[in-house]
Length: 403
Image (cartoon, one colour):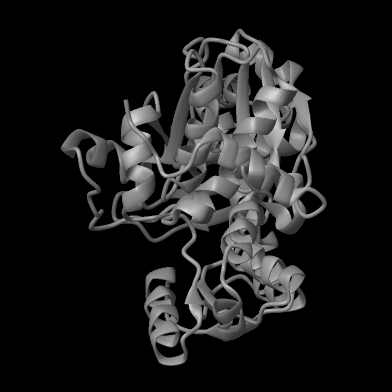
């Protein structure tokens, strides 16, 4: 039996501390996801939390636990978004000066929000790792207290309050799915839930393109990824935290991975069917439910960890999600290079009710005959079956089609 430095009573104390600071976010039932998963699915909407993510909980508990001398020295953090905003607001509420290092390419809305919450923002480095090094150097030079996004017991205690709320709002829960990066939220939720309901399964979900937990759990220790990149920047962490890893290794019931396509489709479902703005990291549990329907014992609670998504990323992800869902179709069609050939092709597309978004001629290709041309088509379609029907109709009319 593991004994952690925090108990469920500590988590209850954090819950009282956060009263009036962090919202008790709503739990919504999703009929659409319940039908997909074959079991009741409920959504814990931390995307509706203050600052747009669960990060405020841990940041506030951590800063509130500092001594008067430490508070006077101020705090420093590094983040591309969610943790930055959580630290900025928590520090402001507690009257503590905060400095946040963010990558130079951090989304402008997140930089602006962090400043508005009261932090001094310093743009440094090409990525979070470089900003992190700068923040640690700043802490050493100035005496400011470094606030780690996940590798500290006070932070985990704050995040664990999400687990208590899940049990209070959905006492019949059997499985909890948690998007996972460094592991602070997953560790906190596991501690709270397993202390009160050891029968409930707590499962992490990572982006396959940035999944450090599966190899780490296999090795029995935190393992660093050599390369990692995902649209889910909120969980794009190359190495599990030492403290969260020990908890996850002991208490969690596994960590799954989901593809970039699955994340895109999940984000699209969030907008279209759930009427919720969820960032890719927050949509990871939805992606797991959609990718493996029937796998999870219900009722299932999916923790939507955040909703801070840059509008430009939203645009790109939605295009990707629509393509992954069969709502866009890109084709190259070979036809005779003569007047009326393109009109005939477009007539076929009209017949099958495909909306043409873009057309481009390709005339320079050594594989083309002297009297041939290829046309790149980008179409708006109604789903995978409609895509197949469009391709089938073109081929029946004698066109050479490639995707």
